[in-house]
Image (cartoon, rainbow over all chains, first blue to last red; front, side, top):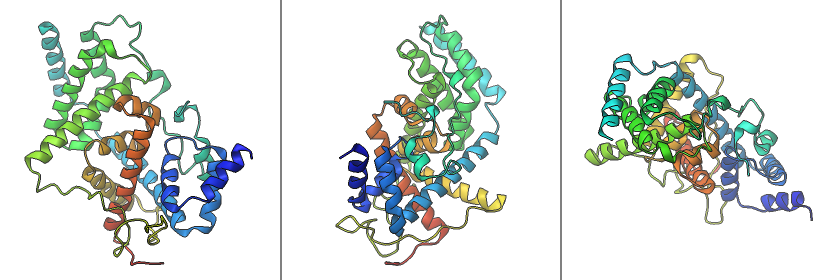
Length: 95
Length: 237
């Protein structure tokens, strides 16, 4: 059996409890082609997993919105910067 | 094994989800990967450079999490001082930016641990059992690992700017309610889009640690948002 078929078969025979772990892992690291294909087939007939995946997509999209919001906020204020420079200088003298 | 997103979208994501769902968000430029290896900067020169080049990013990270300029100042300052002390031990592997973010993440988590200890009854975190999205089941799955219920549909994402902002604020509140350590990982990974391998190095986690932490956090965020959206369903379809 090729790796592709073996991985796909493993994913297709998993329980949904394990599928959700894979959906999440997929956001952090590439799955094997067989695993990814298995998941894709699984969501064709599993409403619960389809909804879970939808929610992850929604979360990712809100995450981008939050990143954009945070990026528009002001950066390090000048007075804080000056105080940190001063603190760095003191720390250097101590060492 | 190369798990970074910067080398292209993970095969699996590209296979299952469209590129627009999860675009490769490497906010950290490859060119920012200035490693201290071979650098002749003294710690003080390096520290001033970090403040100049990465101060804004550290400040926004600390402000986003604490929303207090006093706390943020302390965190940025402690981060720079701690980075000066471990300057010699920074071996590269992640960008200097991510390395600093990792130190800041630890400082932020420490800050919240202190705050929560100080006023523990006031801070209601997300319960670790809050994984289900229905009102009637105890967990996400039945004993044999199948869905205990199918979650409700969430409000459409093609929203007005105001609605999008409202939802993003809800997500922010949910991230705040995660346990310290998890919130920071989520912020680095899912908000700033720092590649998983870099987050691991910066936070001192193995791949598996990070995957588990992220999965738990995403499940908790989903449950938290579900409550905030008010779309919790009863058992069954």
